[in-house]
Length: 380
Image (cartoon, rainbow, N blue to C red):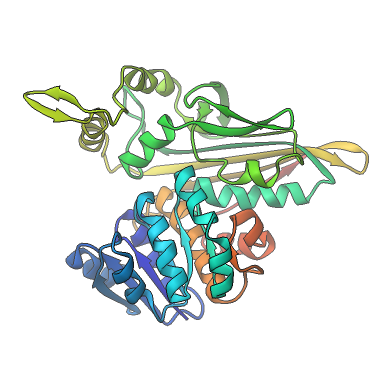
């Protein structure tokens, strides 16, 4: 099978690494607007199976031509390009997954369900870590009880050695981070969909070997789960894990408007505060130190006449052998797995479908284990 990766950034590199080593993959295409970067990534991570080419992800016609002949594509570019790439994939009759991260972009893709089904392809938006892998884990837990009452999803990408004042380092794009902290959050509460403000709902938690942490609402993590389980589950929410104190410090910056796109005049020029914040974050929080990813998905529900709790946990650390960070592994590997499953005809549906509908957990979760992403299950 032939699978293409669009975007040769951190997540794209990990996707190329994974797909080049996946069973049955004979060719991996690496596309980026920077042709030299695409070639470097193909040579370094492609295991002799990757080919590189230049591509402007914002040009639908060119994208459709570039991916023709591939069985699946993985979009590892920023979410604003995903609607156009979805249209290109449908035109080229190519399966597709993307890393998502924006509710509006995902809705635009889901609205193309009929066209994708007619083209005979499967497109799964919002894959990756969260949104993404955690939705499949949640679906697995929901399937293990007769009636799920609550789903609590907690996820965080953190430096192994935190540095003050924010105790954080950039593990993915600054734009994606700000978007999570800025956009509204959709949850289920008392059986109804609700929107809550990001960076609220602060709670304390801990992981063995890590210590005390905090978690708070952020946007995008629930993805399509509130729609899929609307009327079926009483409570469902998602919160991001950070070291204690991070939420209050970062929220203050956003409260004074540093996340806004509305230009202000500074130094005689008009500048968007968000662009300034992105530049500052990239400059001052890009330490490059080893990272870790924490995942906790807790399901409560009824089974055999009693209340049952199932907790799924992942603690993943940067791989010193490959140099792939924990965030690269837990974000790009799940997307690559789903693209591979689509190419291998292991997804049971056609059209544009949420991952909790399109992906069979019993086929997906063993693939995580093969890649050293260990899911621990605790039941009470």
